[in-house]
Length: 234
Image 1: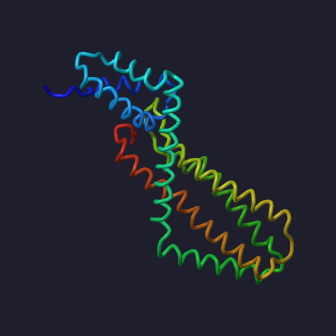
Image 2: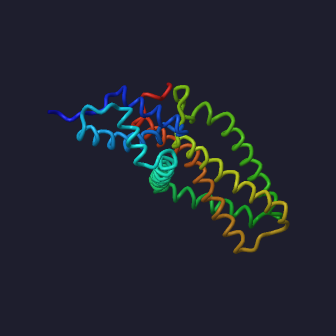
Image 3: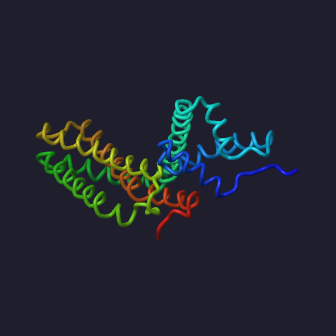
């Protein structure tokens, strides 16, 4: 006798069960549905006549009811976030290779030279921060929603999509706030060491910002398309 397996309709029922357990991210639901499906099919091997509802009820009781399901959900969410962070850092590693290092070096030399040959460092700092703010506003409110954002069918949320947006926003605005504070506090010239450190940090930031805004979202889109092609709206 062949083993009883879940049908596509029954898998959708498990997704609905996860949704009503306050798991709204579809990629998170997939992790939990895999876990639930294994437990249900194990019970069906022991009792093929058992209904899906009875198997799910027994499995939920084995977890410890709603409280137990919450613990499993938290464990799966933690594992999925760790997986996505590893994926995002892999994209960073893929991006930050030759010739990007040469671009960083060129930016570093350009900024350092400009700092050493101006009378007041604010003549360099103020335009840099102003351009960063203008770019960030343009990117977040215009370019990202129209060119980068993954458009999915209505009613579906994805943790990967949210983590990619959070990464871009946090890196950009944390550094901008720090730069703005530095401009308010700083006047005159950096020391030679200060100029070297500032030039290195800003050049590295600009290259990583480009990767964060253009390269990494492209890779995320490719990964998302492989994993969940049925949800993408062209």
